[in-house]
Image (tube, rainbow, N blue to C red; front, side, top):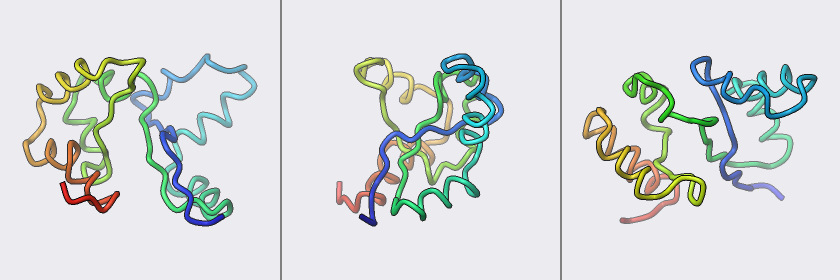
Length: 125
């Protein structure tokens, strides 16, 4: 079936990659690390091969909250980030308070908190 949507597919970048190390057997780590760091090459080929239209990506734990420089975390791609919580593992209240109080521009906060989701899911909220 084509047109599938992958929910909470993980990715990483150099600032957070080591947070994922150690969860699996060490023999798996090189392949996992490569996949986590890849955005365009392997990931898009796998998506095309298996009929996945969209992947909703989730930064590996501890995610952007673990990057001390929030502006650097947002610079990844503010048009392609959606605000989510990791409920029930993270409380909605904590995630919302963190997001509302983090030092990013109101323009990026609006994109990440609402506009990007509205555009992706064709919502009119």
